[in-house]
Amino acid sequence: MGDEVISVRGVTMGFGDRVVIRELDFAVQRGEIFVVMGPSGCGKTTLLRHLLGLQEPAAGEVRYGDESFTSAPPDVRERILRRVGVLFQGSALWTSMTLAENVALPLEQFTSLPASSIRAVVRLKLSLVGLGGFEDYYPWELSGGMQKRAGLARAISLDPEILLIDEPSASLDPPTARRLDALILQLRDALGTTAVVVTHDVATILGIGTRALFLDGEAQRAIAEGSPSELRARGPAPVRAFFAGSVAGP
Amino acid sequence: MTLGVLPVTKSPGATIEMRRADDASLLVRLGGAWRLTNRLPRVDDVDRELDRSRAPSVTIDLAGVDGWDSALVVFVGAVLDGCRARGIPVDARGLPPEVGRLLQIAQETAAPIEQVAPRPSGLERVGARALQRHVQLGDAVAFVGDTALGLGRFGGRRARYRSQDLWLLVQQSGAEALPIVTLVNFLVGIILAFVGITQLRFFGAEAYVADIVGIAVVRDMAALITGVTLAGRSGGAFAAQIATMKVTQEIDALRTFGISPVEFLVVPRVLALTAMAPFLTLFADATGILGGAAVGTTMLHQPFSGYMRQTALALTAGDVVGGLVKGATYGLLIALTSTLQGMQAERSAARVGDAATQAVVTGIVAIIAACGVYQYVFFLLGW
Image (cartoon, each protein chain N blue to C red):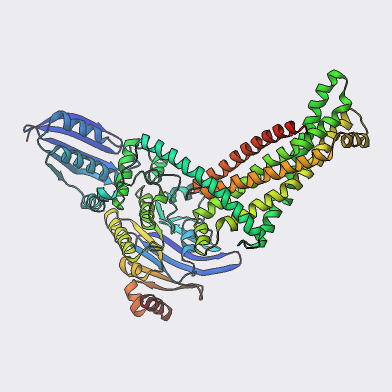
């Protein structure tokens, strides 16, 4: 067993009596970009919500390092989540705050840095995502791509060990999506962050994924795990069809 | 190189030491763990030293750094910027390659300065605010006109709306408001009766409390209190619903289908509230009188039938109709102000709350102002 940052053991996810995915088992190694892929509605975002404790598994457990997250009391969960940054599909920026305030809030709450240092960190984070100079803008004054990048700046505000990213390329044009992919790679390389990326975008999967897990909504389970290029070439039929269909496009 | 010792700053975890060499160059030696969660030295100390010493060159030595995150990147970046601004050559020894890469990414991805619109000054913001108010006033006039046209199209069966939405709004604004309207007006009837008895007692005229409560409730208080309740209940909800639809671009979606948001959203709300307010006022009349009767029968030991007969004798049909007209007017004003606030909201979650607050405030102000106008007009007419 390598250096497992996240491990999911026998997790069954669902809503009430309706099961989405059964007995899910996988582990995310330190420093990798682990992609969770599959067609729409297969349970990718639901899995992310389970990793964040926003939904509880019907069975099984989620572990961060050697700590159980699922059975942890609220204060321990809070401490574990302090190591995690999240980029939501819709960015989820606080619209009543400027970009600087969005990035500054976690720093104000969880560090004892003076205001001048917080401002400097905020400037760095926004510069890292190409939004230097946009500190005083409100989210609704920005384009979708810029909001995504601002969401990423907020997600890395506390230098998290783990980054969870939900559909990074959703609602972005392909060039902007590729730039965001490149940014995620750069940040991983520079900060050594482990990333879990949930996406159905084949270009993102092949471009940044080091390993991938394929969720099959019909089979209600994960049917393949491996390097994205390997899965595309030699994966099970539904996985190859997913890659082929997505590449060919409608 | 011989070094002269300069001020040293140490914080738990992160340390900084500055020394001057014989050639007057400045050595900045960093050590320890540079993490956001630690107490960190301030870059201002280095800036001050650069200004004071006028060092011809700076060397940053990071060999002693044994842990780092963005805190180190920010500090080194600030020292590099400070040296660059002063034209001082700088040599960073032992700089972790990742720190160099992060600084490079921050520089490479920084938006070109011409892409960044300058932020307006305070005076410009005041001016912009005044212009915005002017535009909003124009929008409000246009909105009332659009609503009138929409009501006209509704009357001509040409308006685009969903009848089930209208009936749902009628239910929400009418039947579902009954419990709170009942409670509030019953309590107001009790309060009026207490005040009336207390004052009439000085003249030995407590027996006329039924007249006072009946006239006050039916002519004004029932409509006014029902209006205030509806402003808080339905007005706030209307503004929040429409503002949320603006945030989520649902109103844009209506427009793209060629559906007028005024016809689809505003007209049904105006109709529902204007139609339901008189019914609620009528109900409020009854519960307000009952509140007064509760006090009259218990404190003055008046028979219930006698209290009610005295109330009926004190009231005229004009009092009742006048109260209902006021109720309908207040309903109309609340519907208009709340839907206007919703339509004028900006695309942000915080603005949804602001729209709801503004709707309640302007709704209450509008109905109290209208009440004043009605009092004056009725006084002139001798009603």
